[in-house]
Length: 293
Image (cartoon, rainbow, N blue to C red; front, top):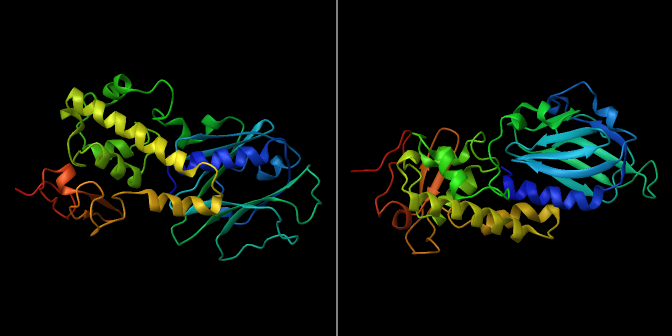
């Protein structure tokens, strides 16, 4: 799933290519991905892009007085094309969900530059919204603090965790608490902070909160910087290569050399290092896991 660093990189990439460009045509290929119908996607046609930004995992393309807001779900992606096919796409079983063709920069009506929004796999979670105000998107309206915002720091983080009785892994992934962190980067953050994913948030000491906050900032910032300047097609591979524990079950921990272990759930899994994070004790690999006694 694209998380904050990947969506931030997408926003930066598109901002450099879309500024001032005019939408020529919008093709809603997968109608199920459209979550709003008024205004229709056709309302974007003839309007110019005037900015691209990110809200948590949401990508926000400002077009005239409208916002084209996308949540890429688990398997969605944006693919830039310097030359789109001249033939309009047809709805089908392929991954293409939305196509935006550009004009206004020397492109012909057919075969101009633009981008495709795709979604692989059978779990269709891609969501596309066209709204007047970005806060009209329910997922954006409920977002919590942005961990890369200038005002975010240990004091703000401590306030968010006060009285929080959930396990810290779940808190980090809760978009209403911190916007943009998912399964992969929560594993990376907890490994960097040397902290068990099942530690209760409310029990963290002041030193642990400071350490965790520093790990949030450094992990996300470094991931964004690693992606700087990369083509969109290379971002997913860069993410995978940059992860130290997530998705690396059975491999040696890059810090201590212990074997990275996994806890599986019904629809996801987490990875961790016992030596670095749980005092050498493995976590029980079952739902509602707890430390083995």
